[in-house]
Image 1 (cartoon, rainbow, N blue to C red):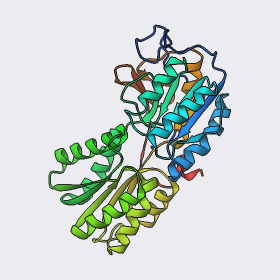
Image 2: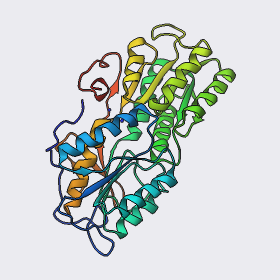
Image 3: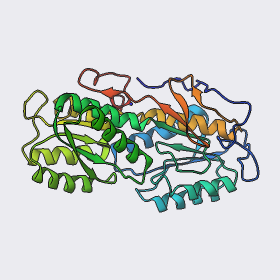
Image 4: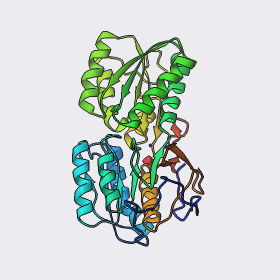
Length: 345
Protein backbone atom coordinates (compact mmCIF):
# COMPACT_ATOMS: atom_id res chain seq x y z
CA UNK A 1 0.00 0.00 0.00
CA UNK A 2 -3.40 2.15 2.75
CA UNK A 3 -6.06 8.54 5.94
CA UNK A 4 -2.57 9.06 4.99
CA UNK A 5 0.45 10.74 6.45
CA UNK A 6 0.76 14.39 5.60
CA UNK A 7 3.27 16.05 7.92
CA UNK A 8 6.65 16.02 6.17
CA UNK A 9 8.26 17.78 9.12
CA UNK A 10 7.29 14.93 11.48
CA UNK A 11 10.31 13.56 13.26
CA UNK A 12 10.78 9.90 14.07
CA UNK A 13 12.34 8.85 17.33
CA UNK A 14 16.08 9.16 16.72
CA UNK A 15 18.66 7.32 18.76
CA UNK A 16 21.75 9.10 19.94
CA UNK A 17 23.37 5.83 20.94
CA UNK A 18 23.99 3.82 17.78
CA UNK A 19 22.30 0.43 17.67
CA UNK A 20 24.67 -2.12 16.21
CA UNK A 21 23.68 -2.84 12.63
CA UNK A 22 20.51 -0.75 12.74
CA UNK A 23 21.20 1.88 10.12
CA UNK A 24 24.58 2.73 11.65
CA UNK A 25 27.28 4.88 10.11
CA UNK A 26 30.31 2.99 11.37
CA UNK A 27 33.46 2.40 9.28
CA UNK A 28 34.91 0.45 7.59
CA UNK A 29 32.15 0.02 5.05
CA UNK A 30 29.89 2.33 7.03
CA UNK A 31 27.94 5.20 5.57
CA UNK A 32 29.72 8.51 5.18
CA UNK A 33 28.10 11.65 6.52
CA UNK A 34 27.27 13.88 3.55
CA UNK A 35 25.42 16.39 5.73
CA UNK A 36 22.12 15.38 4.15
CA UNK A 37 23.12 16.85 0.79
CA UNK A 38 24.09 15.38 -2.56
CA UNK A 39 22.26 13.60 -5.32
CA UNK A 40 19.96 10.69 -4.56
CA UNK A 41 19.24 7.86 -6.98
CA UNK A 42 15.79 6.26 -6.91
CA UNK A 43 14.51 3.11 -8.59
CA UNK A 44 11.04 1.78 -9.39
CA UNK A 45 10.33 -1.93 -9.94
CA UNK A 46 8.09 -1.55 -12.99
CA UNK A 47 5.98 1.06 -14.73
CA UNK A 48 3.20 -1.11 -16.13
CA UNK A 49 1.35 -1.09 -12.78
CA UNK A 50 -0.84 1.94 -11.98
CA UNK A 51 0.41 1.75 -8.40
CA UNK A 52 4.05 2.11 -9.40
CA UNK A 53 3.17 4.75 -11.97
CA UNK A 54 1.65 6.76 -9.12
CA UNK A 55 4.69 6.20 -6.87
CA UNK A 56 6.98 7.21 -9.72
CA UNK A 57 5.05 10.47 -10.14
CA UNK A 58 5.19 11.19 -6.41
CA UNK A 59 8.99 10.74 -6.14
CA UNK A 60 10.14 14.06 -7.66
CA UNK A 61 7.37 15.97 -5.86
CA UNK A 62 8.23 14.49 -2.46
CA UNK A 63 11.96 14.90 -3.07
CA UNK A 64 11.46 18.61 -3.74
CA UNK A 65 9.34 19.00 -0.61
CA UNK A 66 12.00 17.22 1.46
CA UNK A 67 14.82 19.29 0.00
CA UNK A 68 16.41 16.24 -1.63
CA UNK A 69 18.14 16.44 -5.01
CA UNK A 70 16.75 13.31 -6.68
CA UNK A 71 17.90 12.10 -10.07
CA UNK A 72 15.26 10.84 -12.54
CA UNK A 73 13.99 7.45 -11.43
CA UNK A 74 15.33 4.29 -13.04
CA UNK A 75 12.92 1.50 -14.02
CA UNK A 76 14.10 -2.02 -13.16
CA UNK A 77 11.34 -3.42 -15.40
CA UNK A 78 10.62 -6.40 -13.11
CA UNK A 79 14.20 -7.69 -13.48
CA UNK A 80 16.17 -8.21 -10.22
CA UNK A 81 19.45 -8.37 -12.17
CA UNK A 82 18.70 -5.05 -13.87
CA UNK A 83 18.02 -3.49 -10.48
CA UNK A 84 21.54 -4.43 -9.34
CA UNK A 85 22.95 -2.96 -12.56
CA UNK A 86 20.90 0.21 -12.00
CA UNK A 87 22.23 0.53 -8.46
CA UNK A 88 25.79 0.05 -9.71
CA UNK A 89 25.34 2.72 -12.36
CA UNK A 90 23.89 5.18 -9.86
CA UNK A 91 26.75 4.54 -7.43
CA UNK A 92 29.25 5.11 -10.24
CA UNK A 93 27.56 8.47 -10.90
CA UNK A 94 28.49 9.48 -7.36
CA UNK A 95 25.10 9.55 -5.67
CA UNK A 96 25.18 10.14 -1.92
CA UNK A 97 22.04 8.12 -1.21
CA UNK A 98 19.83 5.46 -2.77
CA UNK A 99 16.07 4.88 -2.45
CA UNK A 100 15.35 1.49 -3.98
CA UNK A 101 12.46 -0.93 -4.29
CA UNK A 102 13.85 -4.47 -4.19
CA UNK A 103 12.25 -6.97 -6.56
CA UNK A 104 13.84 -10.00 -4.91
CA UNK A 105 14.55 -9.77 -1.19
CA UNK A 106 17.66 -11.95 -1.48
CA UNK A 107 19.04 -10.71 -4.82
CA UNK A 108 19.10 -7.06 -3.72
CA UNK A 109 21.67 -7.86 -1.02
CA UNK A 110 24.43 -7.70 -3.66
CA UNK A 111 23.47 -4.12 -4.49
CA UNK A 112 23.33 -3.19 -0.81
CA UNK A 113 26.85 -4.55 -0.35
CA UNK A 114 28.13 -2.32 -3.18
CA UNK A 115 26.50 0.72 -1.60
CA UNK A 116 27.95 -0.13 1.80
CA UNK A 117 31.46 -0.42 0.38
CA UNK A 118 31.10 3.08 -1.07
CA UNK A 119 29.64 4.46 2.16
CA UNK A 120 26.31 5.30 0.53
CA UNK A 121 23.19 4.88 2.71
CA UNK A 122 20.18 3.06 1.28
CA UNK A 123 16.47 3.29 2.07
CA UNK A 124 14.37 0.39 0.81
CA UNK A 125 10.77 1.08 -0.18
CA UNK A 126 7.91 -1.47 -0.13
CA UNK A 127 10.13 -4.57 0.11
CA UNK A 128 12.54 -5.47 2.90
CA UNK A 129 15.84 -7.17 2.00
CA UNK A 130 16.72 -10.54 3.48
CA UNK A 131 19.93 -9.06 4.89
CA UNK A 132 22.45 -6.32 4.22
CA UNK A 133 22.62 -2.76 5.47
CA UNK A 134 19.73 -0.35 4.99
CA UNK A 135 19.14 2.82 6.97
CA UNK A 136 15.39 2.19 6.92
CA UNK A 137 12.73 0.16 5.16
CA UNK A 138 9.62 2.19 4.29
CA UNK A 139 6.79 -0.25 4.08
CA UNK A 140 3.32 -1.08 5.33
CA UNK A 141 2.66 -4.24 7.33
CA UNK A 142 2.16 -6.76 4.53
CA UNK A 143 1.01 -9.50 6.88
CA UNK A 144 -1.84 -7.17 7.82
CA UNK A 145 -2.79 -7.04 4.13
CA UNK A 146 -3.31 -10.78 4.04
CA UNK A 147 -5.17 -10.80 7.34
CA UNK A 148 -7.51 -7.95 6.35
CA UNK A 149 -8.30 -9.66 3.04
CA UNK A 150 -8.92 -12.98 4.80
CA UNK A 151 -11.27 -11.47 7.36
CA UNK A 152 -13.29 -9.54 4.78
CA UNK A 153 -13.65 -12.53 2.45
CA UNK A 154 -14.13 -15.07 5.24
CA UNK A 155 -16.99 -13.18 6.90
CA UNK A 156 -18.87 -13.13 3.59
CA UNK A 157 -18.03 -16.56 2.19
CA UNK A 158 -17.91 -18.68 5.39
CA UNK A 159 -17.21 -21.85 3.42
CA UNK A 160 -16.27 -22.85 -0.11
CA UNK A 161 -13.36 -22.23 -2.48
CA UNK A 162 -11.33 -19.01 -2.51
CA UNK A 163 -8.55 -18.21 -4.98
CA UNK A 164 -5.45 -16.44 -3.71
CA UNK A 165 -3.58 -14.79 -6.60
CA UNK A 166 -0.12 -14.57 -5.09
CA UNK A 167 2.76 -12.22 -5.75
CA UNK A 168 6.33 -13.34 -6.28
CA UNK A 169 7.27 -15.61 -3.39
CA UNK A 170 10.91 -14.58 -3.84
CA UNK A 171 9.73 -11.26 -2.40
CA UNK A 172 9.04 -10.91 1.30
CA UNK A 173 5.82 -9.10 0.32
CA UNK A 174 4.48 -12.10 -1.56
CA UNK A 175 5.42 -14.42 1.29
CA UNK A 176 3.99 -12.19 4.03
CA UNK A 177 0.65 -11.71 2.29
CA UNK A 178 0.33 -15.39 1.39
CA UNK A 179 1.31 -16.74 4.80
CA UNK A 180 -0.92 -14.33 6.74
CA UNK A 181 -3.89 -15.00 4.47
CA UNK A 182 -3.54 -18.76 4.87
CA UNK A 183 -2.93 -18.62 8.64
CA UNK A 184 -6.00 -16.43 9.11
CA UNK A 185 -8.20 -18.66 6.96
CA UNK A 186 -7.01 -21.83 8.70
CA UNK A 187 -7.57 -20.36 12.14
CA UNK A 188 -10.81 -18.43 11.64
CA UNK A 189 -12.54 -19.95 8.62
CA UNK A 190 -11.73 -23.67 8.42
CA UNK A 191 -14.63 -24.22 6.02
CA UNK A 192 -12.82 -22.29 3.28
CA UNK A 193 -10.52 -24.07 0.84
CA UNK A 194 -7.70 -21.90 -0.55
CA UNK A 195 -6.65 -22.36 -4.17
CA UNK A 196 -3.21 -20.76 -4.51
CA UNK A 197 -2.29 -19.18 -7.85
CA UNK A 198 1.39 -18.08 -7.97
CA UNK A 199 1.52 -15.20 -10.47
CA UNK A 200 4.85 -13.44 -9.68
CA UNK A 201 3.29 -9.95 -9.93
CA UNK A 202 2.62 -10.65 -13.65
CA UNK A 203 -0.75 -9.94 -15.27
CA UNK A 204 -0.35 -12.61 -17.93
CA UNK A 205 0.29 -15.32 -15.33
CA UNK A 206 -2.74 -14.20 -13.34
CA UNK A 207 -4.90 -14.21 -16.46
CA UNK A 208 -3.99 -17.67 -17.74
CA UNK A 209 -3.85 -19.23 -14.28
CA UNK A 210 -7.19 -17.86 -13.15
CA UNK A 211 -8.85 -18.92 -16.40
CA UNK A 212 -7.72 -22.50 -15.77
CA UNK A 213 -8.71 -22.44 -12.10
CA UNK A 214 -12.20 -21.13 -12.84
CA UNK A 215 -12.69 -23.75 -15.55
CA UNK A 216 -11.82 -26.50 -13.09
CA UNK A 217 -13.60 -24.81 -10.15
CA UNK A 218 -16.71 -22.96 -11.37
CA UNK A 219 -17.97 -22.92 -7.76
CA UNK A 220 -15.29 -20.45 -6.57
CA UNK A 221 -16.75 -18.08 -3.98
CA UNK A 222 -13.95 -15.54 -3.52
CA UNK A 223 -10.73 -14.10 -4.93
CA UNK A 224 -7.87 -12.39 -3.12
CA UNK A 225 -5.65 -10.33 -5.45
CA UNK A 226 -2.32 -9.51 -3.82
CA UNK A 227 -1.67 -6.65 -6.26
CA UNK A 228 -4.57 -4.85 -7.88
CA UNK A 229 -2.27 -2.86 -10.11
CA UNK A 230 -1.47 -5.98 -12.13
CA UNK A 231 -4.21 -8.44 -11.15
CA UNK A 232 -7.43 -6.40 -11.17
CA UNK A 233 -7.99 -6.20 -14.93
CA UNK A 234 -7.23 -9.89 -15.70
CA UNK A 235 -9.34 -11.00 -12.73
CA UNK A 236 -12.40 -9.03 -13.82
CA UNK A 237 -11.94 -10.22 -17.40
CA UNK A 238 -11.71 -13.87 -16.33
CA UNK A 239 -14.77 -13.60 -14.10
CA UNK A 240 -16.70 -11.92 -16.91
CA UNK A 241 -15.75 -14.60 -19.43
CA UNK A 242 -16.91 -17.32 -17.03
CA UNK A 243 -20.18 -15.46 -16.30
CA UNK A 244 -19.10 -15.03 -12.69
CA UNK A 245 -18.91 -11.23 -12.56
CA UNK A 246 -22.04 -10.29 -10.64
CA UNK A 247 -22.43 -7.18 -8.44
CA UNK A 248 -22.12 -7.11 -4.67
CA UNK A 249 -25.50 -8.11 -3.24
CA UNK A 250 -26.26 -10.61 -5.99
CA UNK A 251 -26.23 -14.15 -4.50
CA UNK A 252 -23.95 -15.20 -7.39
CA UNK A 253 -21.36 -12.53 -6.56
CA UNK A 254 -17.77 -13.73 -6.16
CA UNK A 255 -16.32 -11.85 -3.20
CA UNK A 256 -13.14 -10.07 -4.28
CA UNK A 257 -10.56 -8.20 -2.21
CA UNK A 258 -7.43 -6.57 -3.59
CA UNK A 259 -4.28 -4.73 -2.49
CA UNK A 260 -2.95 -1.39 -3.77
CA UNK A 261 -5.51 1.43 -3.49
CA UNK A 262 -5.36 2.57 -7.13
CA UNK A 263 -8.21 4.59 -8.71
CA UNK A 264 -9.22 1.58 -10.84
CA UNK A 265 -9.88 -0.48 -7.71
CA UNK A 266 -11.94 2.34 -6.22
CA UNK A 267 -14.05 2.50 -9.36
CA UNK A 268 -14.55 -1.27 -9.24
CA UNK A 269 -15.71 -0.94 -5.62
CA UNK A 270 -18.18 1.80 -6.60
CA UNK A 271 -19.54 -0.43 -9.38
CA UNK A 272 -19.89 -3.39 -7.02
CA UNK A 273 -17.42 -5.47 -9.03
CA UNK A 274 -15.08 -5.98 -6.07
CA UNK A 275 -15.73 -5.65 -2.36
CA UNK A 276 -12.62 -4.00 -0.95
CA UNK A 277 -8.94 -3.19 -1.31
CA UNK A 278 -6.12 -2.45 1.11
CA UNK A 279 -4.70 0.96 0.19
CA UNK A 280 -0.90 0.87 0.04
CA UNK A 281 0.39 4.42 0.61
CA UNK A 282 2.11 5.24 -2.71
CA UNK A 283 2.31 8.89 -1.66
CA UNK A 284 3.75 8.13 1.77
CA UNK A 285 6.20 5.61 0.32
CA UNK A 286 7.72 8.40 -1.76
CA UNK A 287 7.48 10.98 1.02
CA UNK A 288 9.13 8.91 3.72
CA UNK A 289 11.63 7.33 1.36
CA UNK A 290 13.00 10.83 0.84
CA UNK A 291 12.52 11.78 4.48
CA UNK A 292 14.64 8.89 5.78
CA UNK A 293 17.35 9.06 3.11
CA UNK A 294 17.95 12.73 3.91
CA UNK A 295 18.38 11.89 7.58
CA UNK A 296 20.63 8.92 6.81
CA UNK A 297 22.83 11.06 4.54
CA UNK A 298 23.19 13.48 7.47
CA UNK A 299 24.52 10.61 9.61
CA UNK A 300 21.46 10.11 11.80
CA UNK A 301 20.66 6.66 13.19
CA UNK A 302 17.32 5.26 14.29
CA UNK A 303 15.63 2.84 16.68
CA UNK A 304 12.39 0.93 17.00
CA UNK A 305 9.32 2.70 18.41
CA UNK A 306 6.45 5.00 17.47
CA UNK A 307 7.01 7.90 15.10
CA UNK A 308 5.32 11.28 15.00
CA UNK A 309 3.76 10.54 11.61
CA UNK A 310 1.26 7.86 12.59
CA UNK A 311 3.46 4.80 12.12
CA UNK A 312 5.69 2.48 14.10
CA UNK A 313 9.31 1.53 13.48
CA UNK A 314 9.91 -2.17 14.12
CA UNK A 315 13.06 -4.26 13.91
CA UNK A 316 11.87 -6.94 11.49
CA UNK A 317 15.19 -8.78 11.49
CA UNK A 318 18.47 -8.11 13.25
CA UNK A 319 19.83 -4.89 11.79
CA UNK A 320 16.77 -4.10 9.64
CA UNK A 321 14.39 -1.39 10.81
CA UNK A 322 11.05 -0.85 9.12
CA UNK A 323 8.80 2.22 9.24
CA UNK A 324 5.42 0.52 8.99
CA UNK A 325 3.02 3.05 7.48
CA UNK A 326 -0.78 2.86 7.81
CA UNK A 327 -2.68 0.93 5.13
CA UNK A 328 -6.47 1.18 5.55
CA UNK A 329 -9.07 -1.22 4.20
CA UNK A 330 -11.23 0.57 1.61
CA UNK A 331 -14.83 -0.54 1.08
CA UNK A 332 -17.99 1.03 -0.32
CA UNK A 333 -18.35 2.84 3.04
CA UNK A 334 -15.13 4.89 2.69
CA UNK A 335 -14.18 4.64 -0.98
CA UNK A 336 -14.89 8.35 -1.55
CA UNK A 337 -12.63 9.52 1.29
CA UNK A 338 -10.63 12.45 -0.15
CA UNK A 339 -7.68 11.61 2.09
CA UNK A 340 -7.00 8.40 0.16
CA UNK A 341 -4.20 8.96 -2.36
CA UNK A 342 -6.16 7.05 -5.00
CA UNK A 343 -8.76 9.82 -4.91
CA UNK A 344 -6.19 12.57 -5.34
CA UNK A 345 -4.81 11.66 -8.77
